[in-house]
Image (tube, rainbow, N blue to C red; front, side, top):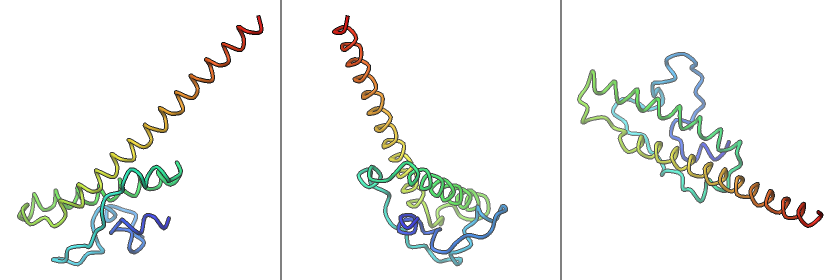
Length: 129
């Protein structure tokens, strides 16, 4: 899971809280903005296995939920213009959309390959008759 540590600011230290606390950023100190990386590129995601994409999806999903919780907290209790993470949320959503694109590409290739195999099989059956 080394690829997660490279991009996820929440994965810097393991998160041990399992209750509602997991949806709050307890790593970053108040007033401190976390250093984040960029969104995942589709070319990088194409090189990942299905299992790696599955793990990354859930890491991004959890991070998105943390960021949405922070955003709602700032909207209700603090000045929403001071929310420190609007670009982090965009990067997470962009990465999640790119994972969907990569999985759709793979699904389309498998369907096309099955269609070609069926065509070849039916041609072979006709030749045998």
